Amino acid sequence: MEPLPIISFSDVLCVWAYFAELRLAAVRRAFGDKVAFQHRFCPVFGDVPGKIAAGWARKGGYEGLADHVHHTARAFPELSLHPDIWRKIRPASSLAPHIFLKAVEIAESEGACAPGAFERGLIAVREGFFAHGLDIARREVLFEIARGLGLDTAPVQALLDDGRAHAALSADYKEAETLGVKGSPTLLLNEGRQKLFGNVGYRIIEANILELLREPNPDQASWC
Image (cartoon, rainbow, N blue to C red; front, side):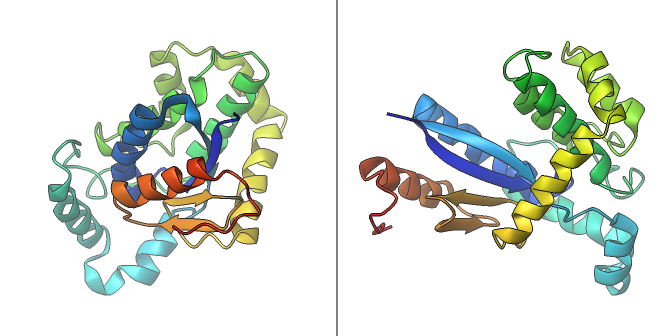
């Protein structure tokens, strides 16, 4: 039986996607090779200064966002949050890390990076910002993270230079628009029929997966 595909849309600068890593890890532990995550990116933080001006100008700007993020993090003591994020460390855009990670993903698919390089890189880039306070919009920071994981950065650089990583990211953003993805994180199951958006509890995710594993026929309506 083929593994159940789960499409996971996120923005690496979205704190809810950072918290959701706990649930995705729990899914991997519970279901193993019965499920297969397919990661995509969406541009929630594509223009951070514009987002702050539009959504946080009357709520304290960057400081207001930082207060909100740190307050929310109290519900997730398993994860550490660097005190300087959004206060002193303010990445201008998530596009740079998204393009970089698409390059890693392509390099892995072509055998130029070891299996699992993309998922390890995705987690490391998220943790780089939220746990370690790194400006992951900066290319030198992203390459340093990659080297810390033991990745060969030469094929990654080549994919950035020839534009293929940019094309792959554009395809992600277009797919998000086509599928009606409204934000980060969003999980899509059953060919997009089941959409789990935002701060969704593990048991809800589990119930959707169990129902689809019970009846994998896409033409069968799910009772979930």
